[in-house]
Length: 231
Image (cartoon, rainbow, N blue to C red):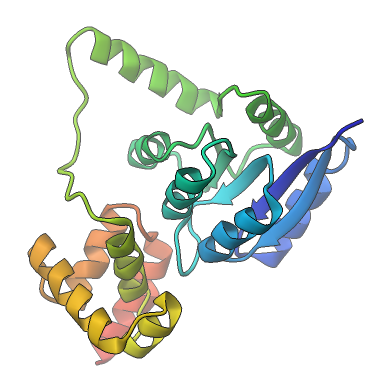
């Protein structure tokens, strides 16, 4: 029996271990690798070529949505299943736009997760029932000419999204330069351009924007906000 090769992208070790036990139980799914950050997920996809990626949204260094975009740009045949603690419409909309084929909330059972992986492997989509219903309802509204309400699209580039996340996570210019393999002067230039583009001129404002845009989650905000206040 040929096994489905899967990459687990989740920053919590105990969660990854649990997911591995759940999905490998039936023998037809094999975990080919485990990534702790979104950037690792991108690199491991290049190295391992997994058929399906189970991707957490809230990943350090590079969030799951941006990692999904980068992976699918290079490897469009990869099937990506997003895991999240949230089922907010904004998150779901971003997942669909990013090109992921599935979305599960973390409260789902192991059987449902394994089923979702198999469905994606076959080229089908798989969404948590409540989300699937919402997508269907929104599609019907759109076809009836009602139109979907959308937030203003600032059209950030992939590099700008990476930079914004690192800034919002509290990384200093030197750390960002090392992470992105660019000079500190280039980081400063990109940061200034980003602030001008968004018309936001302080770190706290960039952090709030990153959370509102789903680039980082509010659990990160509390830590960053404390650091900003302390400066």
